[in-house]
Image (cartoon, rainbow, N blue to C red; front, side, top):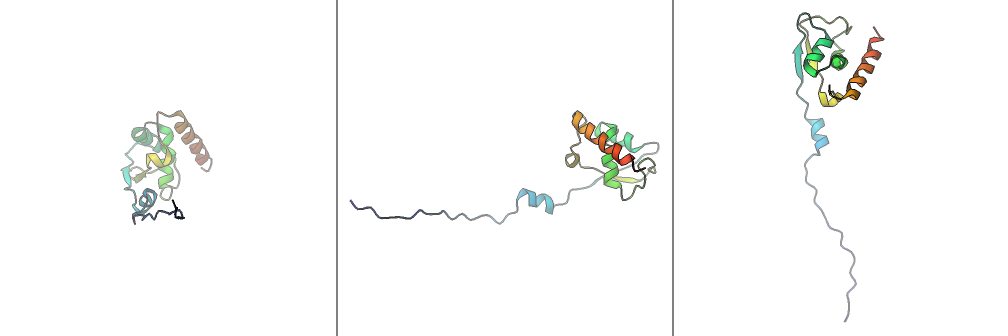
Length: 112
């Protein structure tokens, strides 16, 4: 019996022309959530109302620092862009998340 020599065949796979999930996340801007700062509220109180802990105020400030000159003196009525919880790992039930926000907030406040 005679065997024919064959070379290994490399399969040809056609990749679809669709973007990856990462490319989609970059290409599709997230919808910005906004909230006005009510009269008598501070960034800390707003963070507690929205995210469940006052320490997350720093992320509201960071999202709006181009419009807030001092996080200790934010005018009421200003419409604030709210941070994306997943972008900053905001989780009031996670002590590490709260501690991380507190540490960052302490660093930010040293500037003022």
